[in-house]
Image (cartoon, rainbow, N blue to C red; front, top):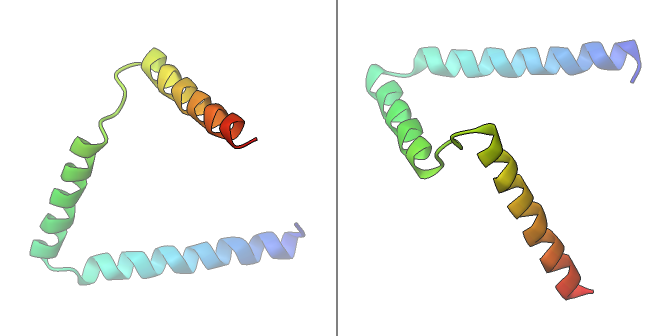
Length: 74
């Protein structure tokens, strides 16, 4: 990437972030609360692993599942 492309990239993300901030400012308290409740629900659906070992185990399981799927198709 050229320096100009990098500047343009960051300028685009700055506009995106400004747009998101404006949307949040325009939200009512009720809407903000509803969004917060939705985040809490997602956290319950997808709990964080308890430890680094648990994270590693989950990643290994995913890779092994992908390998099995790949082998079955070849």
